[in-house]
Length: 279
Image (cartoon, rainbow, N blue to C red; front, side, top):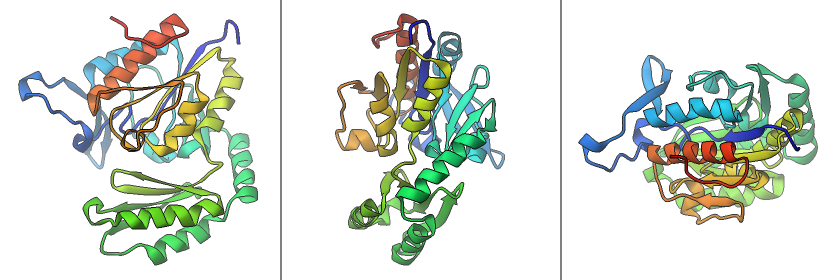
């Protein structure tokens, strides 16, 4: 809408923030970027971004409405302490929960639950299929998230590639999608999307421009829904060579990709139109 704000919706893990294993610090140690820890779990540092990205993210809060858009549960999201003010909106559980000033919007959640009940096989059916077909040799954990979707934590080097393809073929006709991200295999209802929640936030804020970033199959709908989007040079979308007319595929990988994405967000938000780098 003319005169409305710029809305920036970004995936978190392996897009903006990175575990130690995902940092991809391939440069000599003396040239590695300074890092800021933004998540502690069980008294251990867990997720990082560069100090430059932290500064840019703080600046972004002055130029746009920044909306974290994550597949994490609300509890997992609340472990993260990003630089800058607390976002007024956050998308959790892949769109199943819309947080407003840190509190779940119950009307939004109820509308999501109603749509899932109408269009998808029930979670219990999918969970049972995972329990009976996944091999304990390579499965480490079975989990459900917010009573909305299920995922497995696996030993990636032992995981048969064919099993993931078979799971996707089974889940598709039942209204579910499958995504492999690092050591996690997600089974998520197709209508459970970040893009639906993004559209709702855009409606509420009257956004004139929407920007987005993400690295996984579960981010594809978010990227397509935005006016402009970016994906890093790593992750599920990069591995598949996924592209869309409004999405820029960046060459950077790891935590430096996160820094580049925030830089692109800030440049586009300040211009209010096309993407690009800021000095």
